[in-house]
Image (cartoon, rainbow over all chains, first blue to last red; front, top):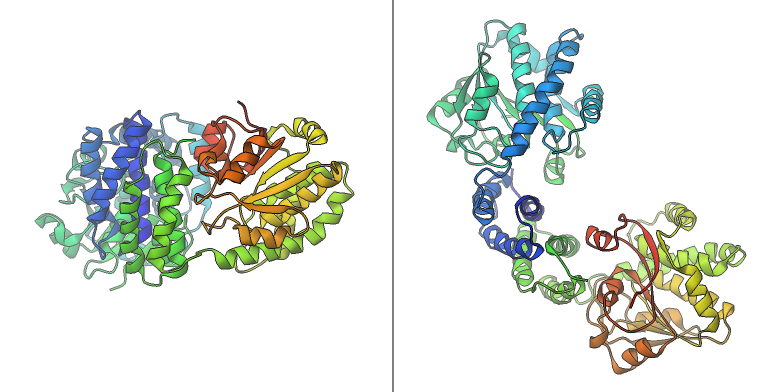
Length: 288
Length: 288
């Protein structure tokens, strides 16, 4: 999926959010934002949005002299997600279709900012409850469920910290639904935005799924840039689950892999591409 | 009022709105937005937001090869405002305090985009009705009313097309309230964004008020850059009425002039400055 001019403005806003965290002086933010313009000017027409992020974020780390700019938020997100899972896990296990509701929960984590410093547990609880009531705007779940029954190997490409806790729960439910299935989780090589890294994913997934390094330095997936193991699994697994917008942006429109996209539409560019409103929850099988 | 980093991002968005009107190709918008970055990089820390616009808009005109990028919107706004005045004029004249309600109407024009291509007259009517019910968030109206009783000379600095029709109505009501008062209207030298120009203002104001050229090429007012006549009137009038954010940004914090600001807060930067939420309607006397 190609980036357009709106993605340049969006990345300026993303940079400003990082500066607001780490830079006190307003003039310091102003001058650094001009440096961001220099970085963005090197983005070429035809790039994917996640490739803009790939050149921007390392530059941002230098500008604020911090390696992992969302480290604290990622930790808080995981903690909050564990708390929420204690509440929703039991409810979902006893629901009409635990697999369906677990998929919804895995998306809910993507929609809610679990990493804000001032937690409002009740507020987050209500938000997740609301999301579990909302239908998917694009819904290939029944097809997925049928394929899952016969699958032996699944590659699960995770997205952000926080939601990864709900991903683990979804994987557990998948394994209960089909006891013969093996799930391998792919996570990012190194920190980028608030994506879960391999080491973070390993901590969350222990005893549930093997975690491999996708080889990605973009906040998403560009298959040809993946590690050997990742590419073998991408093309060789019965099902690939791709979580979130970043993985969607990189994989959609590319050939190969039996991919199901599980995401919330978060921006106009993706909304226009899918012809659905921002906020839509999507469970979509990739077309060849 | 000083611009901050958010103003740089906002001007990128403003540029994109202009490109969306005049440039068909997505790649064309993408490349021109990089040219916008070059222009914005020349903005110096300490500038007012309207001074960023002053360097951006002439550059935008060149990039899209159009002189007056909001010409059509301005015409449509004036037509729609005349239609609305036919309805609200009578109601306001027979209200408890026509002067107060006319001031509100003059602000309503600033809040509503009267220039959108697909008019929804009923929708706009309802919006203006709602606004007339809303209180001012900062309210020095009683002080203004008292000063108006004793005033002989008022300088009225207009802002956008469309709302200028309501400004004319407010001026008529002021003159009925104090028959001895003379009102001079100041408008922009040449087109910038959707601000009313001298020639546009003259057409709207005929028989009601003299219109002078403020000498401004910014979408607001920077007094020391004004024409001789403008500066004489600014410092010599009993009351100066400054409409809208652009004039506010340039005049607030500067010395001289007995100024009343009449505006709707439209962005976070002004909201932070005034410590009120975005959307607040303000009728505020300038502090020395």
